[in-house]
Image 1 (tube, rainbow, N blue to C red):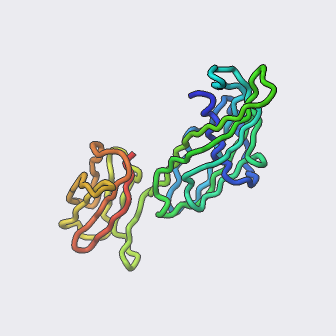
Image 2: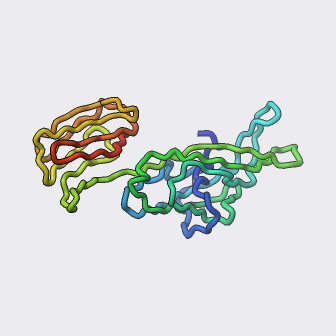
Image 3: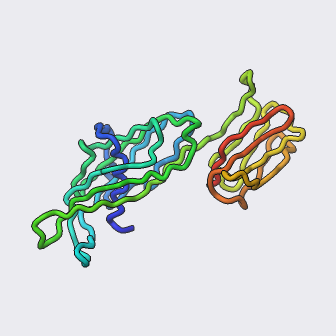
Amino acid sequence: MQKKYLLILLCLATITSYSQCIPNPDWNTDGISPSRAPDGTVGSNYSTVISFKTPKDTIIYYSGQNYNATIDSARVDLIKNIPTGFTWSCNKPNCTWKGGEKGCALLEGKPDSTHFNHYEIKVFIRSWITIAGLSFPVERLDSSIIDFYVVGGKNSINDLNGKPLFSVYPNPAKNILHIENLSFNTKNTEIIIVDLTGKILLVKTLNSNINAIDISELPKGMHFITINNEEVFYSQKLLID
């Protein structure tokens, strides 16, 4: 990864409040730790600290040539596609860091079912860079993406009286999806998975209290799963990762 992309972690500076996080003292490499934010789970409080070290040196293309250059400072200008209701705060005022400086950021929130999704958070970072021989700093605007998933965990589906009917897990799923019957009649119960265009990808019939469904051949991405019979009709998003 080129050094100009290693400032991706500054995406956690979407507001100028002062975070109580402490940078990881063992992280001494330019870049971030971890490179993907831990998943958030619907209904659970979420908080994570990501540590980073901004690069001191970089290569910049200027006036038709590549130059070895020094990053004086960097600041987050804009971030897009942040889950509504989440808060982001950095450990430096104005979300600005010197080149070569360690930092950290805190992401907090409590995702609900409306947040269940994969977020490609796009980060726009402005850097001030010194090139030997120039009497003024050069500004550069870079962009990058950090992945963040809000997942469903093990979802228990209840009837109108609060009686649990079944559970669907994991979500996101990779190869096997489990449908666990808790208290409803499985007779003539169908599982249907469709993509976002409505195309049917899979149809299965439940035949026991715990069913393991092979989804390894289905395309990755966001889909819908429907469970229905004479007693139950339920539909939810399903992420295949």
